[in-house]
Length: 105
Image 1: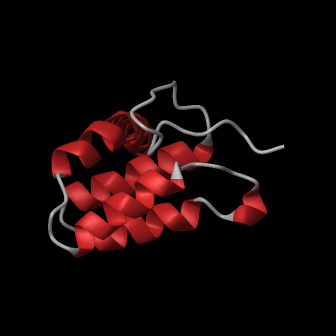
Image 2: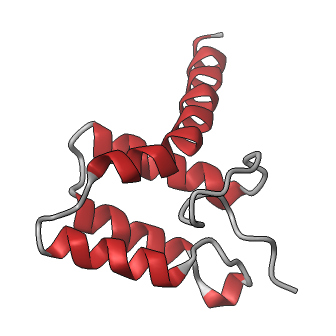
């Protein structure tokens, strides 16, 4: 059965990050913040994470498609994206710090 939806794009709902895909989304958002991808690229990566073969259900697709349309029209409220993805980025950043520390040992 599909896992419960992630907090990534589910109508403002929040839960603890528990799935590897949640952390991957966090890394994608960090890349967006660093200017390594634009919003369209970010949404493309997010869509890739919702692969039907993995039986994951990461997004409320109606909301995601609405947001993507806003991005395409240049009307996207980036604060909304930040609110949705920052908790995932925080976990990714913490994981990255641990990995960097490990590599220095």
